[in-house]
Length: 107
Image 1 (cartoon, rainbow, N blue to C red):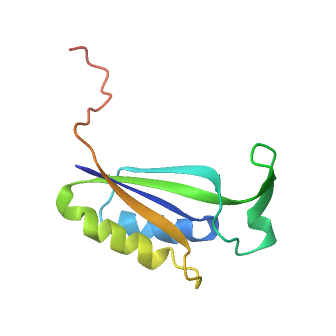
Image 2 (cartoon, rainbow, N blue to C red):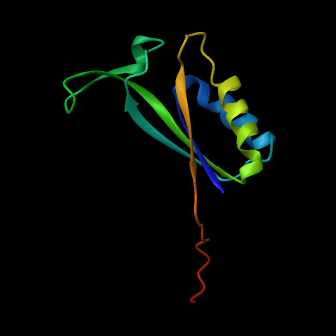
């Protein structure tokens, strides 16, 4: 199993999620994060007291899938996450050794 993690602009997340869902990807997590992507507009930027500089409000998207689905997930994220910038975010892949459902049963 793989984890595909992407940091993308907030304005692109809806299109990315819809594309992934339409392709059958169901294990998605979405988090608001701050990073150093080049902002598309002033609304994306905030001042970070922790870092002492302006940061961009962006989305961290996590997708968990089988090994043979990784290329498709990455392709969809890169296609639908485009903004016209030379670098509009980043996509990472990691191996997941094991996963367990939280099902209410006791072992």
